Length: 437
Image (cartoon, rainbow, N blue to C red; front, top):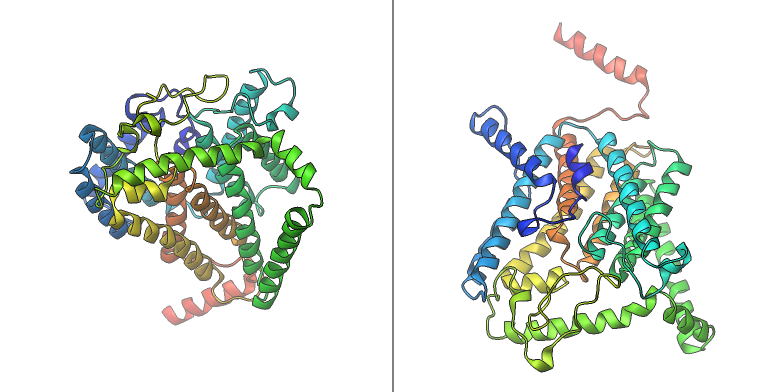
């Protein structure tokens, strides 16, 4: 519960981006290690193979690092996040589907969203309608940058969707609306795009968990794609509503998309030129330590009223702002390959959990909203990884610990389905007792 409530509390960051939750994790890791060494309980280590090979690629890339200290610090942070993930996954496997923790996550996210909205309103915005403007203060909440807050709130929206069987509709959708406003207040285009993609995946998987036919799913997907293509053709081909779209883009956060894309393309082009001479990688965490030439200079750091203040040296590069680019350029192709393997294994964990939970039943089975929400959240996180390095975030590894714990729980402790009549359970218990006697 403490980990769930403190995971989003990063600001102000300490040395090496330490946070309030870190001392709690250190104590828990110490106790966990002592218990494990005493041999009192088995320990599962999910994703060990991909993580090991990612580490091998990262260590090899360290030899090319411009700043070896930054590379070493990044490897230590990687090890710390993975150790916390293993700890939480093993502790949570005894919590069932942890309804209380999911509810605590949503309540905490609502508080963080409110704090971010208040930040925007108190920094020159007269009303909530000003939140959608492309310029102005960007909400950071309890984080140290807007994109990280947006990623957390996107994942939190799916956590709220997972509570379909535990929380009333009015409460659930009120929380989702509040967190949605919080995402808009960050002016993070990546977060908004990730949320849309994740919601599409959530809808498809939710239909699957409700036993919708394959033909129906395909027909629905094709219908949605047709509507989207028709809208694009009407706007860009026939010109219907194009003037209104341009006006909306100029006066809303959509206007930041082209500007943000140009900045990221400039960053990636500079990093790619340096990677060409170091195919094993330029070193973990070394993207922002590349010295720029005059023609490669990126936009200057904005003042605090425009966005978060990083204090970055304009003659140094910025971070890659992309997990996939970062893994390739900083850690090499081996690390990128097995990072992708890890991401696909998460989808496999969710799918296997739901299949074991359903057990071939054709009726209603509890847990469908949780499976769909987890799938949608990971799709959203994978999309947002194109605009920010999501695998550095504590809340992402907390989510992964929950996903792995679900698989461990169902695998070790099969649960009776709620749609199963009590007489059926009693009959089997009686038959077992009869056989034992």
